[in-house]
Image 1 (spheres, rainbow, N blue to C red):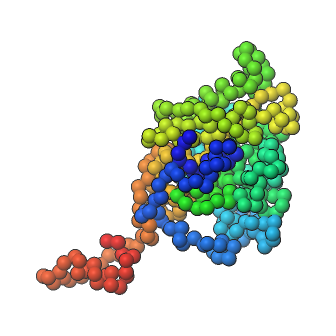
Image 2 (cartoon, helix red, strand yellow):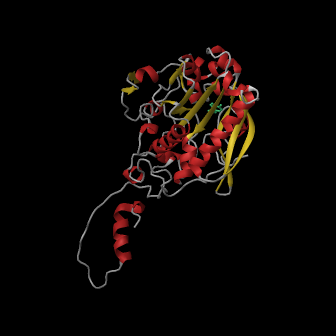
Image 3 (cartoon, rainbow, N blue to C red):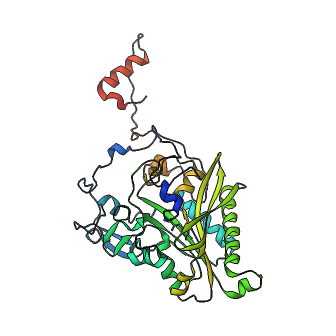
Length: 372
Ligand code: DAH
């Protein structure tokens, strides 16, 4: 069992048990730019001024379409304000850098065959988010406690798997979908109610597995493992890996890939051979397919040494200036949790001056906020 939990895959049995167990990354105390105590205890009553209209993939979305005072709606302003940010589309942001590095792997190894989507609207139907990927009617992830509902039939996607069916129907056979996903959750250094996933999907036709002498499912499972082991090596270099059997409603068999990193087994992604029912419903009668879903924050925290998931949302220059386009794995350097404040001062001192005298004068006025 992997120890680190940054939004582990929601639908696997093991992960459900662990979802609210805080193990793994230690709490990061002194260097986060803002503390949880500054966050509202009840986001519905505490209102930060928010933009009222945002544009997503060319579509205008009004705040009132998403945040409503209505019992079927549980989306607070704080979540609405995240909808248009699209951190994964910023080339200088760790999540964008990671996305582009994964794109490079697929482009190189599959000669640009994978179609890429990173601007699909995160507001989806209950059908897309759950029914289309065979999530059972009584599954816990459908509850108002776990998912953000815009109304009884519309949610903020809780995984990028929500787009599998529509893309299959549109005829795509190789695709990667990257996007922000939303899950109601407590906030701490490894959990945040908005994070980012990448979904991968590949469809095979009978001639591809028939020549191998294998059945379609074994062929797809073998290809999937080879592809993802290659991806892990591309991201982490030569690392030890292991496959763990698991359960997802949309794949059978289903696996998790773990890598051994800094003396711990780290769960990297969930994947499997797509349930035949999903293919059948979407016009792929004689095919088999594989799919995977990976959490970008979890990987980026490890690759860039970022100790707190909240940092990804920081627009503090001391965070954003540390990363550059195409540079995977630059190591994050912690900075003060207090806002930067540059002031030059000159003054005359007497012979009896000591630094502590000065510090006490300053602290007498500014209090403990002054660090040095
Ligand atoms: N949608 C899953 C989650 O968020 C992740 C996942 C697992 C996606 C297996 C897949 C898959 O496509 O095959 O928990």
